[in-house]
Image (cartoon, rainbow, N blue to C red):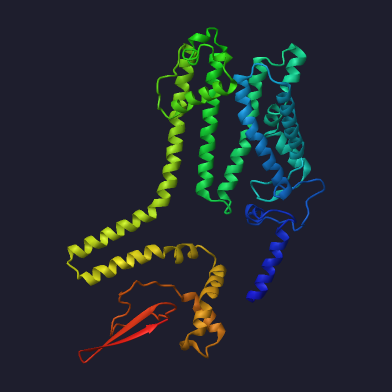
Length: 436
């Protein structure tokens, strides 16, 4: 089978695999198992939504914004708002309405089978899968608890209602899924994606701890015997902004183990909460430091390896009393290798299929070989075979490439730079300079 014929079959398969309107990640995520039968139809069943449809992706991003709002407002209203304003209740009901719509939509969203890695568009299988997994959690995190409690107790602002509202935090799994997808998306920088995730986790922990600790003080029967009442006796009369900032201040100083001592536990409830919060901080700090260390070390390991090579070469030259010129050649070689490492990715290329390597080599080296006088009159097919053996090389100034009377095992084609050819005949050196 010719290469053109193979490419034709490949493109036909690729076109069949893609679903109209899907995102670029569709082809990456759908990987059928060996022996699996692929449905070549370009359309899903009626009323079924593709999870890779750009419109559905936009809907998911819109829900992420609502999740961030829920993650902030749920602990905040539990701690600081004894009576919920009617406008806030209206906003919450609207947000819950959007998530209720999403629950209904999920019954019609196709999913990728974990065994066959094929897209399942059977509505019955989709419904059974959703009902047996996250349906109950999604319903509990969306249910309108305030009207239900108001119907039975006539206390819509009761503490039990606010505690049940914390079930909204289940929606945070959407944020975790989003970050997991962004970390694999080549369009986003991995370093900044990870940093954004770590910052988000830290801010959420600080916010929740500050809100919960303030709630303990606000609900304590003796306000003056609380962490905030000891330094701010009439703290309930202070503005909402002042109380919230004070709570965040305590939370961040405790998280960072700064501990100025101006705000501290005053009663057993607060002491117990502080104990658990500091134990949690041990794990969170280890998580943050471990991730940041991994990111930083990954970015500096290449430089450290280069410095070790330079040190080893210098030690080797000094121990064996090599001439200064040879030592300079060694160091220049390692410096140039460090600078050009990104241009000569042998490991990356070796991990690619032969067809892709052939296309890369043909694109890079065929014009160079075609222009070389050594290959004038040679057929294109021969040069196309030869390009697979071509390797780019970079040499620093004053480095010896080939010594006189040395058996040459390679052919060098100079693409850019200058070369001096020094020939010794009867003890006399002849210098020929060539610039390219």
